[in-house]
Length: 87
Image (cartoon, rainbow, N blue to C red; front, top):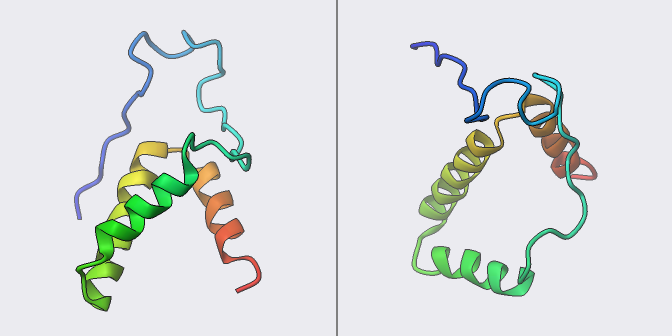
């Protein structure tokens, strides 16, 4: 499998944002979606016509797209641990 080279998400350059390069942002646990009910309805609606296997594939793809967008391994690990808790 090919190695994905690291990318900078800071268009100005490392350190320009005032954050230390490589510093992890904490996982936001506060409500951060302006219309959470609307988002939930949209999420459910995207899967309404899918069978169980297709819905699981959609959820896995969505998770990977969002994980790539977040990009911070520490935040992703914390999110996985939070989601796994009490299961």
